[in-house]
Length: 513
Image (cartoon, rainbow, N blue to C red):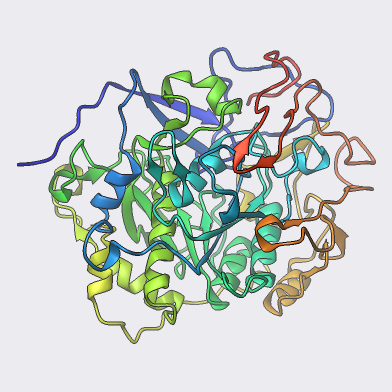
């Protein structure tokens, strides 16, 4: 008999924010969301990334992580005992809130490159709620519900780039990837072997010069499997998922069963790319109504109460969630076979997934992640031979319609958040892993110069003030843009989040869309 679960009615909730993949349209305020814009607030004039969250009314609805592990062939056989131990995963996202379900020993903070890094009360913290949801899929240990992540012993390095209102620029993403490559071996016991990119931009640049794809490719060349969300527009996939080398991921709907026989492709999944190069989605993974960790007091938590399940869990849907599922599976695969190259890992997962035959997937040949299938296959002798990007193209082309705004000034052209950069100069430095020097990226002081903390589990990359920024109506980057909104009492205390709440429910000084 088929193992089925009842599901409530789904409601489609579009969240204007810096997360997952990717509707290249103007951000719009949700009903009841904040509308007024305060001076100095960083905002997005178009969506760098907008996730789709599907909340169902009533408690208990959604796909548990235990069910996800079953669906992807990771709960039995050779995969059953894998935990991701010894594998580092870099989560470039909106930060992680230290909620009780996040094991403190499994997380460290890399640099906070977001605009919120300039506020000591927001730095490193997930004010949006998306990064925490992704982290939960990978490493959760929620004793309240028994929810365990798919790779619970992987070491997660959080590099925060996104704020609670969606403000993040392509240049921040590029700098974040550069940092991961440069620091992938800082913890020799847990080298970073996976980057989770539940992000993308709506640009359609030439792949042979695109700087975003170039950054992702440098990570790939350095032995890091880059896993990127294809997007949630249901149309054309986004950058850097368009890159031929990396592993891109779309979402499946399990239709309430643990059998892949009735799984279909989520209608929001952006399956193809018909820009300068044709590109097809590499792999599918469960991404609808995934139950992972809630971030109480975050933007999403406050705006979409119907997606809460109990006090610790939250339902989220999108190619973001499917990407986090796949990143966790890559960590398991690399634990089992640590000598795999990124090309080999990609080949094993793509070619040993379960072919979907139901509904809108029938006859298309798309495969859903099957870890035991990959583990059963021999290690292939493969090497991808696509054309590498030179990285010398325009940052503006990579942005497409996605721009951030400060003091009513839009960041455009060949300027980064911190100042002007020649992509030719940057590409040369990035290729030699010299774009970063201490806390400077391309000569701009964007973070502190090293790790703080006495043990690896407690380490955090130091912060810095961005001064003298050339973009926007202010000569200093010290204002956080969140007047009257801050996290109170945030700290790790035996894995427990203390005093986690917004200081006010008044959103009048925040910006929504």
